[in-house]
Length: 521
Image (cartoon, rainbow, N blue to C red; front, side, top):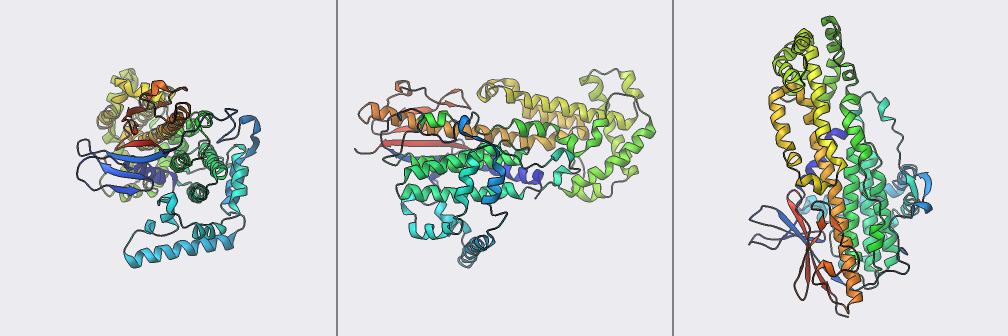
């Protein structure tokens, strides 16, 4: 699957991922560690997890525990090499075959019983309570991938992550395949199972080491060029965070407040992916770099369109369609020739000319003098630059500040209006924004989950300092209350005498909620 199609699927998965509440009569569903129930008023799903906590003071020294090694201790090597080794890209064919057979049997059993594959091992082990894990069976399953831990431990020590794609030299990046990125999800699931097994067996040091390796993998994926990779990194961070919520309930689990504070901020730095995404149009259709305000002849643009048409056909093959065409878009573009392109450009000309004159404030005489194709293509590249800057500029301020700004909140509606007003010349922007919005939300969702986890650790620290009591407000904490990236404020906290509730701010379609109790001492 190519990165464009894959990133759209991931975007949908992230945007539609829903979680729990305790409202209404609708039946609640257990999904992994979270109880999901829909709020009938807002339509959101509230994801609730109950945590039974043991007071735990700050470690001595405070940074005794690290999730990702200190920068001084990290090696100037390439983590990707070790991840590929852990995936068995070099050898381990027998182990891969054994794992495949295990999964195949689960799929067959699910089909025979008319159930979901997730209802059967090994998949069901990731969703069941840690205390219910069939320990011996899980151990036997993990033997098949026993070569992985050493490679993953070494990967976590490396500073860099690079797959040496040289993507700028690729003729058709939209068709670039990313099998290794998808396989990293499987790595993370195996690691999650190892972590949960360590928790079930009361091995906090082993569980903590695996958690750190998971966060390191998520962090490394943030160095990749593709938004798909950062979305996978966000998913892996979510897996690690869920396991961490189980870890902190161990009686002898060390306090991780400062370990979380020491993580890279943000954990998944999307600047590399954002930079490539902003230029993706020109990397895919390199010809568009020739489009500028320099007057050129009609013949030049005829020859230009002859070169551009094959690139448009490649987009059709990969499933990237132009708005405004009939439903049989692929057939329409596949049949595209110079005559059809000329007619298409002519139909787009009036709106494109109006955009250049009215919005771009170009000299009407100059615009009128341009050949029709130059007007349409120039409008396309100018609008692409304007719209991408309007979106990407907000990645340079804290997200909660962007959310408070009326201009930012109206961006999507503004874009929708411009797409209608400008027509085909705005098409390249519409390809971009779905992936951008998904990536942005995923990045801050990761930060929110870490803020929830760190707040829990601050509360465990408070309980250790105050005879096992929960704080009445977060103002009582002896350490700073972590900030929800969607609000710029601490996580909403409610004290209810016997328990307390942390309510994270709303994400698209979901809100996360933790119910905290102090375990009997």
